[in-house]
Length: 439
Image (cartoon, rainbow, N blue to C red):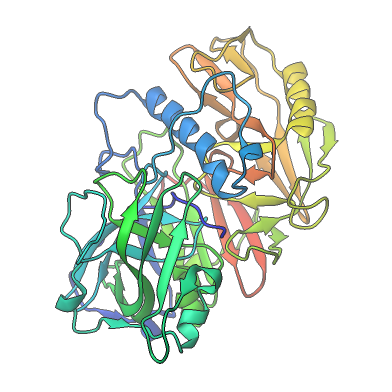
């Protein structure tokens, strides 16, 4: 099955004020996104330098590609061995509340998968986690879902049933790094925080209550919140209450701003105004992923046609993903693109000290960057140097794109300081240049 591990946010929830039923949230609401390397994150290591954190994010990006094309041929080309994929070291985490009374859960938020699940009591096999396990018996709104329901059918190949009658629907998911989860498909109330201080309730949300979970998860998290395009993701379950609209604004990794990134829903998620560029959102299998059509990439005045990828040669030839750090292209196209960048950069070439990226330069006063534009169908997204080059040491800056054997991914470095809006009903993705450090 197509599933992935990692991405989108610690959503810090302050459960104060009035709870808002989901139907009353049509005016839109916003949650805070905290990068996994932020001081607010449980993964924060104060001994790491900013450049060390960026290198770690790049390494995680290399591993995440397996979730989009889970074959041995999907390896990113690099001169060094790939680091182990750590499932809950995605770029962002999410905190939400489950059940009645509300039980706080810290989970990976992931635009590359759909299922919302957490570790549950009793645990036949669970990885160690710092927080207590969710006990479904303690929630008055928890209900196991039977095999005969439409909700069970929504999991498609991820669901299984044994025996006759109204047996409990079971799920089993595996991920690209061989991590796994299995347990009961259930319904319970999810509470989402809001920057307005009025948390939003989503009753009877479809969740996975995991009784057998393992792999490379670590103790800081206790599950995953799927934000993909499939029918059981949080985005899809919010559905008409948000009119299929959400957006995010990612603060640059290099920023010293105290403001966090934001994830907006409903009317808050609409991207409009001057400078907006919109491109069609392509529906194709698997419906979890958000496919766009990339026509070309320009380096200065040189326009390089994108021939497509294993996702397709025309429509839907690239995935946009906020959990992958780098932007990844097929090897032949990347070679042509990097040659154009190399010709356009005024600077001194050096080796990447981490051995990951292939086009690097010494940081000095003579270093000049070319203008790079991603030409999507109907949208010319002009990228800034912070989108296209990343500092990997005190003295070295590298091109933040890399080759890949299979597929193509528009990563989060390329999306930073853009308000990126998804309209699942209108089937568009929009980009608006924005200073994401400002509220």
